[in-house]
Length: 115
Length: 115
Image (tube, rainbow over all chains, first blue to last red; front, side, top):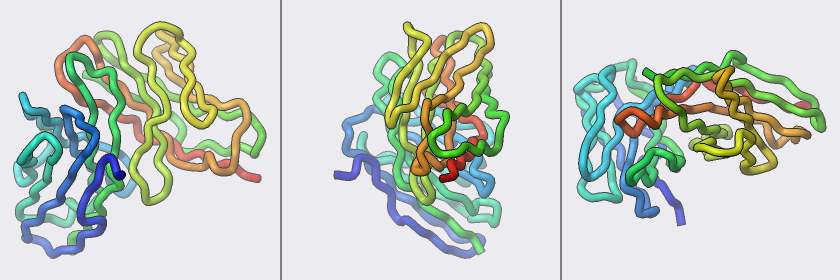
């Protein structure tokens, strides 16, 4: 039943490791996103992706990369993890079509802790 | 560039009283505006949106928001607050006249409703 799901819910890892977070949506949406929410609850867009284009927030380090095996999935890969990567990561999806008027649906979040 | 400001980190209201959570935005074109709510350890949930037409928008859980183009504001309101409304509220904007699917979120306002 879950519209947007993420795994794992919690991820604890050491600096320098490489990790992935998976996201799946069953809403049939054409666009998926990744957000980072820091400890002060500030929410920052990282990527927007549909089957036509990937839009990257220019402030995101290239250690972060989205991978989409199909329309329903957008996974987030993080290389060489740093302490500052500790945050909650949210996946979201929406139906963009030819406009941006539709709301986004968010997953439950993945809390990443880098030690 | 697009941006959103939520000037209050926290709003305190007594149960039964009206509440207002403020939001102002900046876009070069015309805006799509959204309000989302985040409960502890959860993802964001969509409340309401302004696309076009009537400036007063009604949404979930009795919330409404008024689009004011001259003041570039989109304040969230509810006539009678409930303790269960206590959560973190985010305003978001997308410039509909410019390319890209990405929303820009405000910093969030924590609403505390006391019995």
